[in-house]
Length: 267
Image (cartoon, rainbow, N blue to C red; front, top):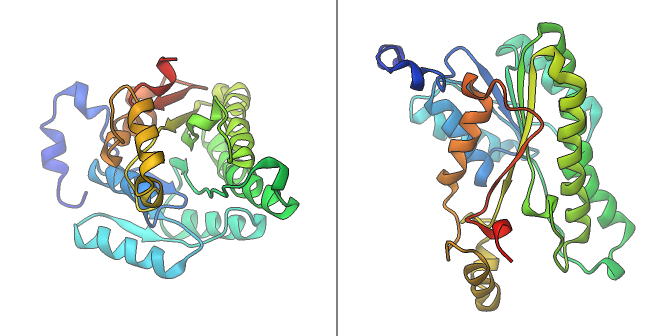
């Protein structure tokens, strides 16, 4: 954060591990929702953040909001599912903003339809965005990180990376694959001093989940199924993120950490 170096310098060593001054972080799909919250959290501890998404106007609004709060923020719109766009976007970031030290693959979509009724177009759209997109972006960023022998990568997975639920089959397959992609990248890249991990959110309060919360039956299901008996607040996801992208998490690799209020812990 601009003008806050003296404050960071006064922190005890245990907290200095989490400071990201001098680091550039790209968060895909970050102009709204959990992606924006994560981008802002990275900026709050000193990172130079790059906001991304397919919606150029949305990206610009998000950057303006961060700049207004005094953060070092930039916007580079591109579609994570189109390799040529990703190549150009990554090159632009590294040439004009700074080398990418941190990549958070957050871009994703949901299409709620029973498997038996799922059109091939919907199946391919969900897998392309939620699994192929992170693969393409990480492959391109990862080449540069390998050359530099340094990098932090976080995939935003899901409870659906571990268990199934009716009506979201394509999403479940994609997020399950993203969990295994996290482990595959760890296996190949850990020796290059690159940490690849994932975060699996439970049910969080965002604009995208508002329709679910406004459905009395589904809202009651979430509150009953979650041992904490509530939806998560977006800020409750940022602590794990900061651990995984900072030097405090240098020896954490190939893990998918669940932040769900206890759902997966109980029957």
